[in-house]
Image (cartoon, rainbow, N blue to C red; front, side):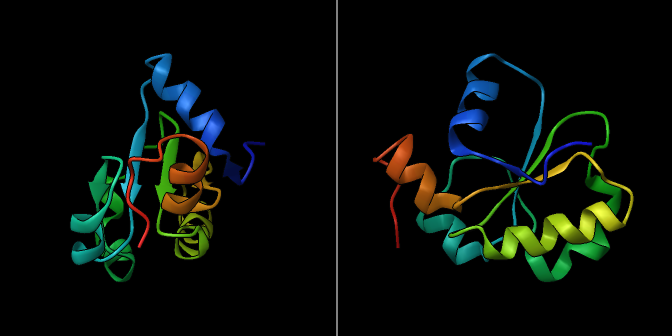
Length: 106
């Protein structure tokens, strides 16, 4: 079974290794504009309307500010046919603290 979370370090390695993946940021557009690490912006409250945009053939990483909203989205996606969905533990905050301090915390 695929673990529920992926650490910032694991995700950084996945990206550095060029592993194909899908990164989805589930925050609001104003938050995404303030600070992001790339990926697609699909707001949390619109996730059910976008299920056809999620991939099940590559790691599917969900991110938010601190990992709370993305954990709820990850749980929802796993219940709806995406066992490959993983929550980026600690969100943007953890990414900024542990991988890239140039990513703004807000």
